[in-house]
Amino acid sequence: MTLMHSRRAALSSLVALPLAGCWAGPYSSHEGAALAARTNDAPVLHVITSRRLAGSGAQPPYFDWRRAAELTYAEARYARPDRSVLGRIGSVVSGDFGMSEVSPFAGEALDRLAEVLSSRDSLLFVHGYNQTFEAAARDAARLGDDIGFDGRTILFTWPSKGGLFDYGYDRESAMLARDHLADTLHALLGEGRSGRVHLVAHSMGTLATLEALRGYRDRHGEAGLERLGTIVLAAPDIDFDVFKAGLSRLGPLRQKLTVITATNDRALDLSRRLAGGDRVGALSGEQLVGLGVRIVDATDFASGLTRHDAFISNDDVRSVIRRAIERS
Image 1: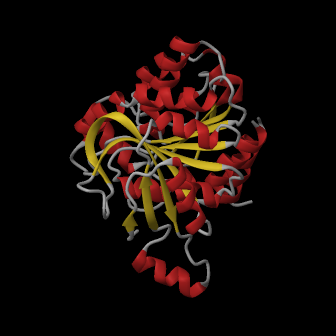
Image 2: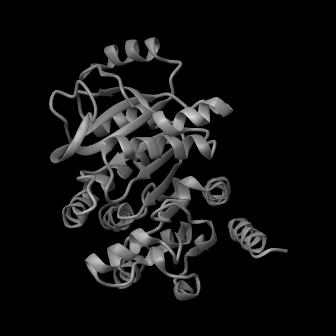
């Protein structure tokens, strides 16, 4: 057996253990239903965001990097990529999972989110550092589609500037978003809700997620958490000591965690230089033993310029997420 096959088998065994278009503007419930009827052939990405609208919102980027005081709910309709040979060649130029329409809701965001999703299983994705709204939406749509998630996909998007040299601003934005994310979880898990929620966070988004889970338990105790399925932290951009302290506040939620790491992650090497301290997502499985969480070392599966997105770009690593959801 080759080394790659050996690592692939090990990855499987770990799992076995447990966009161009137009903006329609704010709409009422009646108008939203009409919109859905007109475009019901396009998949929907549910968006909850603490970003501000970009200008009038009539064209991309729809939402920008500025911080909003209140959350906004929106529905983004997107086109799946052409899986044919010609389609794959064309996607190199045109990209994939392009958004065709983004429609913010004018009312209370979390009430609308709960109304739309309360009885359905949900996949909640939290993006990382250096992500525009459109890039984050593309990743969320691709993740839900590629793992074949049988439910609703939700993007929680916080105000990243989407620039390589804006690490400080992004980190503060992620920390500021933790309460909004905790409120979003409560809207999905609160009394009267029946669907299960699976949570996948990437890079700096894992910091907001860890803080949000701690805040949720501080405010609501264990209420609703039995319906929280798997929690996947992919390439966590979190200081190791901060991570250990955060885990100590999660109680039984720790058993739901899967952490995906890669020791050759170049983006996290840059984060280490900028922020100081070892980043959890760049540590080996041996360095994380004893934390009480499931560790998946994806070093042999990380590729590309930054080697930071194996959770979405590699079939084997995506299968980790899919099977963790199935087994939760």
